[in-house]
Length: 344
Length: 284
Image (cartoon, rainbow over all chains, first blue to last red):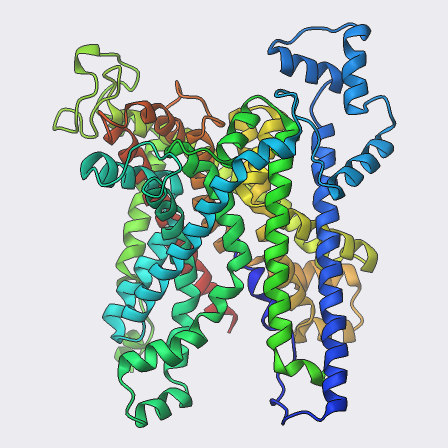
């Protein structure tokens, strides 16, 4: 399972008693430490991004055969030998006459300036191809994450800490939901709600009612994943002293669950946010294909089919950038609110 | 005296009785799948390639348990005959993933400092790419085929497992028994071989079982997108891909193969989790 990383930001500091209110000098030193930690995290994220760009560049070199010939053949849709005269404009367009290291340097410079190269097939910059489609996928991804949170919170609040029978049912549903393949879940939803009950259109489009089923397809497995970690935390928090004291103050069970326990229990799910963004963006590849939705996922599939590597690499790199950035933000937010930092 | 002894040591049958029912179901499914993979003719009810156009797109019935496809082929028999290829792809991909992860994970934990840092960063970089996208990247380079599918899924899942293995190797490296072995003056190579690797790798059995389930799901996702094994084959993902065109008239062509994949993935997860818990108990 790919969840191992995301919780690593949580346990960063040593466990130390929360300090009493700080005098000004200590507050200044905390600020310095926080700034240092944040700078180090940003630097680490930049190194990862540089590595991702490097992988992306060398992936484009890995296409077997002479690159200019390959590009020309992909454009023409047929494989044949090309003359030097035919290849010259391609070499000039993609800078292939330069040594590899210079191409690499140019590629990195381009990325920093927001240039992801030129599509082999569509004769257009990759950024404009992605730009046209990114909105639809981003909407899908964000809606799916929202749905996942709602589903997860409702399900966990209803079933966690309710005795062993309900708890077992709850976690069984979590595990099954988390394991559902997107293509199958999507098709079941399509069959039941679009073809059977006719509540939603079969072919998505970009309207609101075309968004519900695709978003649910991504949200249900995601909710299962988040519920697994939230449930454990939820049941632990139910036994905490502050819950007992809240109950002694006469707070109702629902009040305790919603106002106190849920806030504690949702922390691990928050740390999964970066992962959730990556998961929904890559899951969009399948969901957009099922529901015939436009978006970077369907662009990616057709680009893989036609070996249009700049587009493939561009989308894959972009998702990696989103993933790393989201994780960095979660990580920094943690650093800022973690009261234990000044001790280290 | 002897009577007390007998009740105190759990016999095989009482130990079996304590296992959860889910594990029995998973085990039964694995046996069934093994049989289907080795000798599909024993389970199939008809020839998976026999065309029978008058019987095209029939809903599930007594004659055709899972219905028929657009050429009148029996879906149940096709699924049975597709088992071997589907399982081989799943096992192969899980194998590739674990071997890659083992290599990267133990290097990141055990290599000398600068090399370990480089490998560690590399794993982190690969981890930034979601598994499906990494797999698609490889397919874009190598072109779709069963072999590419195996390597693509293996490559996609490797970074996550590499991190897990790195953690386990590091935990073993910092444990008391390794400290003791160092104090006894054992060589580095011997400590790694005799102490660190066996202890760090024991949980891999469970990880492998989990990974087979995941790999089957990923591989069928690729076939579903038309980027894995192509439709004339009755590999489960290819069945899904072929059935998509008929989803409005014949939903079972997609629902049933999908259900089989979900069941297999769940069985692998159930067995993997059980192994994981048992291995952890053994360590305590």
